[in-house]
Image 1 (tube, helix red, strand yellow):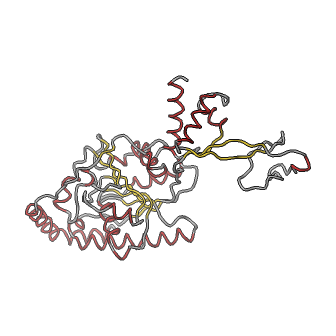
Image 2: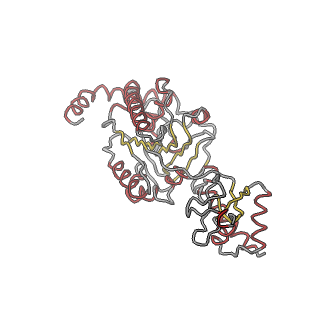
Image 3: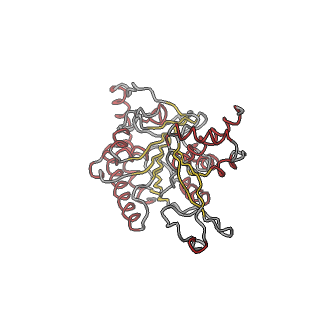
Length: 364
């Protein structure tokens, strides 16, 4: 057997495991996929080797013997009558033909169930409409998208008590949406995409005991201002969150300074999250809002895109370019420095609060 043949066969196995597709197949189907003959003894030995290594399991399958049908019979169906052509095998004097099938040991791909997107501050979040449009056009199935808009956050970011108020509103809206999803027979755990200040509000919802009943699928944070030591591992272990992708911009000039002005914030969107259950991925050329430039967004949620892959593929085999492990010993900036910068922020808050209130009345 040529080494190149073995490599090609192994690559096909890796592709199926990585994408979570076509995990069950017959010898003939696999042979067609790798441009080989099903009678090739080397290919048969290769598949037998997968079984011996417990990387695949053998499955007995049965096919209708009638020439005009020849369809694979569903598992568990009685072998006396074809559910497709209605042939009575006993009457015809024939029996179903046995076929050897294999099933790779791995997870199947998942659908994007439904998505909640949460924008950052000072944004009308036009990218969210673009995201909804792209999802609707790129997927072969319906995936509802809830665009959560909490309004323009300006001086609100300087006050922790205003964070809590915004986070409570977000949590309450999520609870309503999840209940509506249940009533519509959608899964109760939405996937989440959050950006910038929206990531901080999401983290506060996850930490609030009032919303401990909420469960989520896979979460993507982009340009996150959540602290690197936020305990994502506990949330994953407790079943609150399925998995987390932290998409970091290598040219993000805003995130590093968030902790100096915004209480509870941190540079998770630059240095990454420290949790073992988190996948950190850096896009070297991205700035703070580059994720949502139309051409970048289209690429991220395309079939081969990072976000689409994270939301749909088995994560055990998901190793995208740019993945990195955060430094384990991150420390916040010196307390005195943060107190000084936040005092300046509170002074600015006091001066601008009346104008902010007026703007909200005129342009909510």
